Length: 337
Image 1 (cartoon, rainbow, N blue to C red):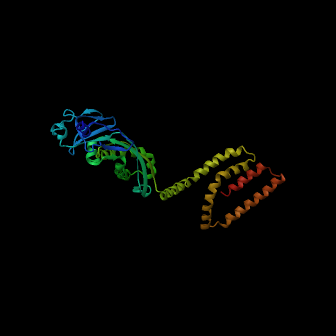
Image 2: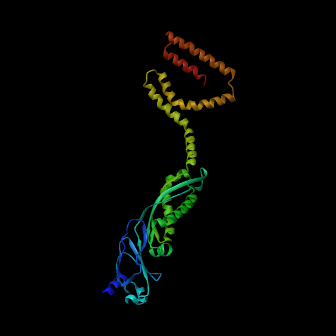
Image 3: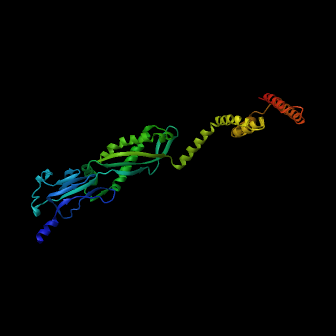
C-alpha cells in the first residue's frame, strides 16, 4: 500500500493550467521531482497553447484540446526509453503553457524628446505616445528566443523591449515622412497604419503578432510649444486688416438702426476700427518721424478745421440744418484725402 502511494506521488497523470490574473505570457507546469506518466491527459484550453519539452528539446506544440500523451499523439515518445516502466524511466520532460489571449492597452511613449528635421521649423524635438495590442502566435519561437526555461514569463518582462522597438521604428518613420509637425496631428491614423506595417515583422521575430497600433498624441516640449504659440499669434495679427473690414461691414447696418444717424455709424465704426487704429497709430508715428509734413498741407488742414467750426456754430444757431452741415463736412474732409 505504501508502495502504491509512493508511485502516485511520483507520476503526473493530468496536466492543465488555469490562468490566475492578467499579465502571464508563459508558465512552466510545476513538476518538482515528478515525471509524466505514459498516457497522461493534457488539457489545453481556448486562448492557450502548450509546448512539450523533452530533455531540453521541444518535442511538440499543442493547440486547444484534450490530448492523451502516447506514442500516437506524441511520436517523439517512441524514442524515449521505458516511459511506461515507472521508476525505470530515465528522462525528465517539461510542459510550458502559453497564453494566446490579446494583450490589450500596452502603452508606449517617448521617455525623452526625439529630434527630427522639420520643413517649417528646422530641427524640432517632439514627443509621442499611444497604445498597442499583441498576442503570442508562435510559442515555439517565443520559448526558444525569449522566455526559455523560466517558470513564469510576464507581459512586464517583455514590455521594455517592445517599447524600445516601437520608439526606434517611430523615430525612423517620422524622420523619413517629411510631414511638418503642424500637420502630424491630421496624419495620426496614417502614421498608426504605417507603424503597424513596419513593426509587424519585428514582433514576428519573437513569435508575436501585432494586432493593433495607435498613435494617440504628438506634441512638442513645453518650451517649444510656447514658441509655436507665439508664431500662431503673429500669423493671426497678419490678418487684422481683413478682420477690421469685417467688423466695419457689420457695424454699418447696426448703426442704421440706432438714433443719431452718422453719429450712430461713427459709434459702430469705433468698435470695429479700434484694433486697426491701434496698429495704424504706431505705423503713422514712424512715418511722420521719417518724413515731416509740408507747411502747405498743414495750413490747408487748419483752414478746413476752422471752416467746420464756423459751420457747426451756424447749426447751433439754426441757420444750417444737420443734413446740410454733414454734406458740407463730407465735402471738406474729402479734400484731405
